[in-house]
Amino acid sequence: MQRRNFITLSAIGAVSIINSRLTFAAGTKSLINQPDSVWVMVNEQWIKLAGAGNAVYTYQDVRVELKQNNNAQAVYVQSPVSRLQAVKLNWKFDTVKYTKSLGDHWERSYGDLAWKHQEAGVRNPWYVLLNDGRDTACFGVKTGVKTMCWWETTSNTISLVMDTHTGSAGVKLADRKLHAADIVTYLNKPGENAYATLTRFCKVMCEKPLLPKQPVYGINDWYFAYGNNSEKSIREQTAYMAEFVTSTVNKPFSVIDDGWEQADNFSISNAKFPDMHQMADTIKGLGMRPGLWTRPLIARLDDPAYVLAPKIAGRDNVKEPILDPTVPETIARIKKNFKLYQDWGYEMVKHDYTTWDIFGRWGMQMKTSFTAPNWTFNDQSRTNAEIIGDMYREIRDAAGTMYIIGCNTISHLSAGLFELNRTGDDTSGKEWARTKKMGVNTLGFRLPQHNTFYAADGDCVGLTKDIAWEKNKQWLQLLAESGAPLFISADTASLNAEKKAAIKTAFTQAATSQPTGEPLDWMTNPFPAKWKLNDRTVNFNWD
Image 1 (cartoon, rainbow, N blue to C red):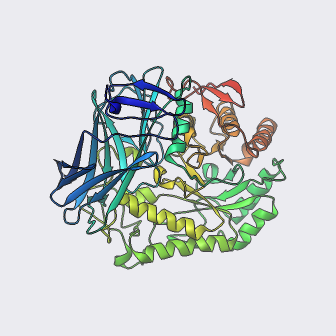
Image 2 (image 1 turned 135 degrees about the vertical axis):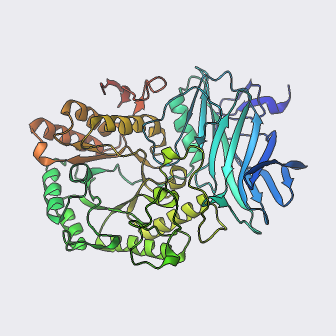
Image 3 (image 1 turned 120 degrees about the horizontal axis):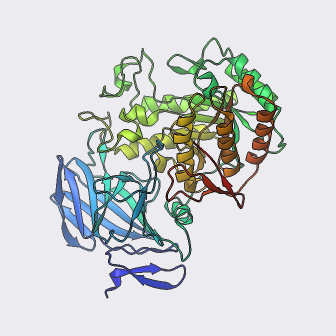
């Protein structure tokens, strides 16, 4: 048996054998073998590269090089003339023995994450796990990657595709060498379940997460106000909910959601919010920490054409023009606004819509392509992933000491830059079915990213008269005891003594560090109902 057929279990000093050209490890070190074939996409055509020795593959002006980079296999790409659209690596791998697979999402999840049977042609963003009922094999790329990466499997092959589009066109790299991705693999330790394995693998993919100093919790006005807010409503809501706070060392946040801004200008408040600095001071005076919602890439109706992104199918560029994130003036405006929010006194900013505003599609719509055809950015020399990642880094820099929550942000590019990430689509203050779908599913399948990528925000508990309390109190309990951020969006008129007591208990729990919850039935239930919370088993009834 050749050495390349071994799985190295370095953490436990054992060796197992698998019919594979890949090797992967249960410890921190992993030796990943060279692919069986390397392909690139140019002019919508896949072209196979020829091996040139020393892990180098070429075709005309295109060069792909693989290098060992500590526990990862680094991929470098050069294409000085051809507009490169993607790079694909294939390994021979016996996937038939694995009965289930689990992938991630590009940005938020949409109630559709689950352990599924493998299916050819399905894109698994960022990572994929394969499970045979006992062992779990993990394949992924490190966070902060400069290409949009996904994994595909067939009965005898596993493939990694690194997308290098800029807009919908191939990138113009010119003389630049692109560090496309760092590939990492992982195998469970003996007796370790798939949930623990994924949590450990997330730590391999993200070695330096940026995390809040204390657990984050608080209130948000969206799911009862839905934009119908004001200085008066925020002040009254904050004062009312502050009565349930028990922690003297970790104050909750009061996040002002959409509705404060002046139409299309997120540097000016409207008449309902006469003084945003005073609003922040008011929240602080009531015992909470002020937070604010913003949409960085929305343009003003009077903006000059040169700062605008091109019109594409799916976006309403007339009513909602979008800024081009590759134009320097766009980045300058975004940074100016974030610095302004800090000057106003806000301690956390939730920024939203950037993936939609860039691509004109939600993550759930990116099945075969990220965006509509026939458009590109002003700067065509950077990949989509680089453009987005660079924008995130500018936001991080401008935010200073403020916490940042990414919403509708690319998950693998947010890790290490934002303290929190909204990991699922919106829950609801009107429909329980939506909260179950978007909230419970998201929490069940993305909690392994909590405190490994960022603080994983599963979204709010919408406490209103429209959702039965027997359902919402379970969602409140799960969030409060999960260890993840808890935000409550409460119509105070709907609160009775029982609900008030539950909120007080939830705030007390969420203010302190807790072990991350574990869904015990997630291998068979896309809406996990059996959970391990604080070392005890808790059963929920979501139906």
